[in-house]
Length: 311
Image (cartoon, rainbow, N blue to C red; front, side):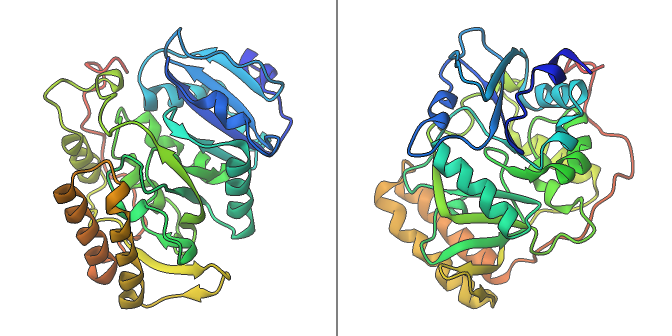
């Protein structure tokens, strides 16, 4: 047993892991109207990250990039995959509380999900408007769960953990819904609750090891090329309404997706950018392929591991 293994609280079957910087919001995740039904492992990449004293929390210093740091954690503490039933990897700029996180774990268990995330409040910074909370639904089944706040069945995260070991710092969320042989109805966006993403997308690129002129899209293309596959956008292909009744039919779901246009007045995006993303969300749900065929690695990654400090 490693030192980290020995220090894990193991007071719950649920674990939250956060890569924390100096402005991390993770202390607030323990507050609210409910006690946390989860342990928290704070892997601080900044010495100035907020210190939290709580029986459910341990803190370690883990400098470096986000995904590389998570990979080191998985290698240093493989017992998390057997000692916990569900594991969440939450970015440190997510605004939420203990009751919301508790409910997210409960919903994942109740609906037998392998991979899921909360929807986003309408005033969140985002890349995909389709992630905004839709009050028509309890949850929506999707081909894509974003990297900022994914919840995993621990056994599924163990299966997908190889993605964290390939040197990429973005783009693995295009693939991780597809490592299962039976991915349908196992990944979802939860609309019953929402969290706020408080930081504009891309503000931590340098901390993630990106060059100043390197685009996220370039590395995402490398990931897709490595698996010889495509990503045609976030697609909602079925849902559960607020009464947990099953909903399907791509046109019906696309019309329901159009409700997100009401979020425009609250969005931090400018009008043109929001409308472009919202139209894409509706169009993708109406007509894009679900694209959930299982993927396999066929060759070595093209990432230069030595230049990124991984060799």
